[in-house]
Every structure is written in structure tokens, then in C-alpha cells.
Length: 246
Length: 212
Ligand SMILES: Nc1ncnc2c1ncn2[C@@H]1O[C@H](COP(=O)(O)OP(=O)(O)OP(=O)(O)O)[C@@H](O)[C@H]1O
Ligand SMILES: [Mg+2]
Image (cartoon, rainbow over all chains, first blue to last red; front, side, top):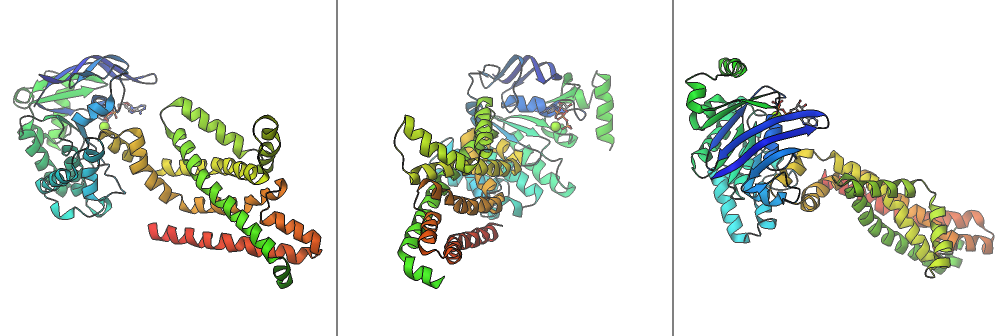
């Protein structure tokens, strides 16, 4: 079953054509890495999937619901599709534990005891159980990002979106976050769409790599074709050369 | 000034009580109404933004006395009878709400936009995100300007004197004309205003420090 389907999707910011005729299908359980130069529309694309950005034309079906339809309940989509941001976006006025427990409590109406148990086990999974009572600002970037991932997982989503989750981090913290992400990717039921230029991550756990430029998808390959063979698109080849060598 | 307190103490205390009552009511409702319009101004719904804009521009740019007179004179002609105290308190509430709306809006806008996105992406509604994540942070940012609004509100409650609201200023006017001791009367009145505004000012500063 496919989790995410784009059919001839067009997205405009005013007059600016940000997504041009996107066609893309992501199956349930797949891990897809999205790369491309700055301004190519990666964030825009990923943000349409949970309705943070609206599309103007085409069909976008996520978890069986059409996001182009104005009547679609975005909050229902977001219960099933989590998102991890470049700058974490933890709630600055809540403790770490509350950050994780808040949405399950008020959106899913999860029983408080069960909620806490799951939150603590997720904190444990990301290696931060001892930080539960701290405020987000007291944690390092890498720790905050792992909390943000735990917060998304607490909703028990079917899919997770990551928008450059490690690009705001100091180099020594990147691996801790990537390891948590790899761990999730290996769980065969989770669908992941990840904007990242961490090619090690892509090599290890991605099923597919997509290259975007100027609002278009120029290359959509299996991991094997992308890394071991050659992307057929010239710009994709050049881009890959650049991010791998530096 | 001592003699004014000695001779007219009960009247002054009555006025002080009225001023305090009017201030508390107006403060409570203007904080609610002001916050509501501040939220309207930041919603994605254009209709609500326009409503909020119109409200704020109208009430912010008309003298408080004119608004109060409107409720005191015009409303009784068409709807129900209202006494001076009620008309004054309503006028003061609506007037102050416009300023509080502007203050709270600036607070909401100084909260990082990632906070709202994080909450929405986690399945919360706009209202849930606003109430639980954005507003608590926004109020923190605007405690000093809100404190100023509250103090202005107490001082502005003297508008009640113009519509027979029996507040502190009103009693002061009456006492001044009876005692013919204008200077000491208004000094006494000033001191009593300070009795309200100084603790308020001190409390807001304390709150600011505590939450910083
Ligand atoms: N809210 C917006 N309003 C107008 N234009 C926007 C908006 N968001 C993005 N854009 C434009 O759309 C284009 C794609 O932006 P997007 O953020 O999706 O790119 P990106 O691939 O994520 O880039 P980066 O690698 O820098 O994050 C850019 O030209 C950007 O300026
Ligand atoms: Mg981006």
C-alpha cells in the first residue's frame, strides 16, 4: 500500500512556481532520502505532505486522504504523519517530558499513565531518560533533536518527515541523531521521507534517493542505482559529486 | 491634607473602592477581550484579522471620554438604561482592550514561528497551540508593557468622574468644591491613586523578575 502519492502536484508561492508537476509515490515502510541544491523546493515538498503548505493543483494522497481537498482534516493527517525540523521546535515553555506527553494527551486522549510510560521508554530509546525534567534550552542541539524525534514517535505515527534534521548541529552531535534515525528506519513499518545531505545515512538505510532542482524531481533512483551505478541526470551526478567529496 | 482625610475620609474611601472595583473589572475583561483580538490578528483567517484591525483602530484612536459618553448618553436613548459607573467601566474596558490587543499581538509575534509549527505538526489545533504554547510565552515577553497598560487603566478610570460614576476623582471634585481646599483635596486624591498604582507597579516588576 502506498503511504504518500503525488499526482501532477503544483505549488505556488504567489507567482513563484515552487513545485513543478511533482509525481512521486512512497510505499508504506520505505525510507526515501531527498536531496538537491538550496532553494530547489525540498522543504516545500516535504511540508506539503503534512499540510504545513497547501498545494494549488494536482492530487496529494497521504494515508488515504487527499490533501488537495479543502475539507480534509489536516489534524487527522498530522496524527499519523510526524515531522522533525531543522531547528527542533521544542516547546520552550514545557519540560522535556511534557514536550513528549502533550500531544498524545490532548490530541489522542491517551491515558495518563500509559502516556508517561511510553514517553519514558522513548526517552530511554533516544538515550535521554535522565533529562526528563529539564527545559529544552538546557539541552544541547543534538539532545534537543533526539527529543524532537521522541516527541514525534510518541504519536505512534505511520510516517515521519525530516527536514535537514542534522544541519543545525555541531559535527560531534550529528551521529547521535543519525543513529536514532537509522534505528527508526530499520523498523520496517515506518515510512520515512528525509531531506538530508548525510550520504552515509542514505547509503546505510535508504531505499531510494530523489534529486530535486528548480522545483522538479530530476532523478528518482533506488539506492543501488544512485550510489553504485550512476544517476542518469547530469545535474544529479554533479551534485552527488559535490556533496560526497567535501 | 490631613484635615481632608479627617473630614472626608468615608467619601474618599468610597471613591477609592469604586475606582478599585472599576479597575479590576476593566482589567479582567480588557485582558480577555484584548487577547482575543490579538489572536484574531494573528490567525490565518482574513475575516477575523480585518475585524480585529477595525476594532483596534477605532477604539485606540477615539478619546476615552468620547467612548464613555457614547455609552452614557447614546446607549440609554436606544437600548437599556445604564448608570455612570457601568457606562464608564464598559468604555474603559473597550478602550483599554485595543491597547492590550496591540501589546499581546506583539508578544505573539515575538514568539518564534517554529513553536506554532512544532505544535501544529504534532497534531494540535491552532487554538490548542495558541493556548498552551504561544500565549504563555507571549505574555512573558510583554509583562512590562502590559504593566504600563494596567497602570494607565487605573489612572484612566478617572473618566468615571465625568459620568457621575462616584469614583475617586468624582469624590475629589465634590470635596474640592465643598471644602474650597482644592490643593489639599487633589493631593489627597493623588495619594490614593498611588495607593493602587504603586503596588500594581511593584507587583508587575516582581513578576517580570520572577519569570525572566
Ligand atoms: N513562504 C514562502 N514564500 C515565498 N517563497 C518561498 C516560501 N518558502 C520558500 N519559498 C521559495 O521557494 C523556493 C523553494 O524553497 P525551499 O525552502 O522549499 O527550498 P529548499 O530546497 O528547502 O532549500 P534549502 O536547502 O535552502 O532549505 C525558494 O526559492 C524559496 O525562496
Ligand atoms: Mg529547506
